[in-house]
Image (cartoon, rainbow, N blue to C red):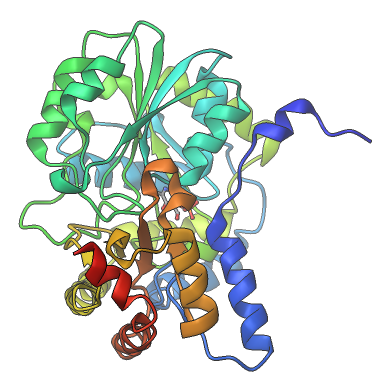
Length: 396
Ligand SMILES: Cc1ncc(COP(=O)(O)O)c(C=O)c1O
């Protein structure tokens, strides 16, 4: 049987492939430090787990409303209104199984073949995968290391045409850890306000940021709320990747479309996990603060360590839990280097090229691992660096 033609255009997420290769090495008895996978290494906070157990005992084991439990949608609306400085209600909230469906469903609902979508490159691979899958045209916006991995705004303006149907923003960003500064978001809002476009603002890392000001949402600028789909969820903020629970905040007309796609695919998000979601959003938040404090400590340590490796240059990321090191100075291609680090040094990381063509020349290290393991990884890489050092010196 032949697969549908569109399946030739769908992509995958390389982190999972690299994880499989790393696990195969471990099965042969090799020691591997895992810096490839993008999930907090912390346990889900206790009070959230207890809320889920209680919900199971209380019988939250049946279908619920497609859009999400009203009480959870109320809690999400209040949380998003508070954290973004906007006013949204539960009718603008869609609860779905993870953050990813808020890429999948709104794109499925909005994009026609040929529509242009501007998206960050390097970026989360699912954006480009879905754009291509739907027959729309991906327009890659390179992220600029010298601008803290933000866009070149003049280039953005030149890419914007009447055919642009959607713009994808992601801040804090995967894989670079970049945070788009307020003035850039404001400039983007000014360029988009009077256009017939939707912005998919992926804010899944919104709470994992290290600056004095929280990351800014484009939805908070005048006229932008009705053009924006905010993607957020529980996976990163509350270390709940395996629970599969996320949400979108978007205009009510788009919620209706997402509801139809949800009822055709999932019926609803699991009921007892949604009860735990209420506990996450309305309960104590010191668990998040503690996690971010620890991530900051690790970020500082791994970036300092990577910057001491010949041929590596690593900017201090403003958010998320990824260090995105420029490795062009090693004289090796980033794909070869990532393989070399896995097979020769026992450090599993991702070639920046997995995140799009403009990611080549970089390697992503997820610092969702203990400080001790991170320091061991840096030691292993330093030792392995003897093999490329001459090239680095040669390249200056
Ligand atoms: C930028 C970005 N958006 C969305 C997601 C998806 O999150 P979830 O696991 O909740 O589907 C991820 C996960 O890695 C991500 O990095």
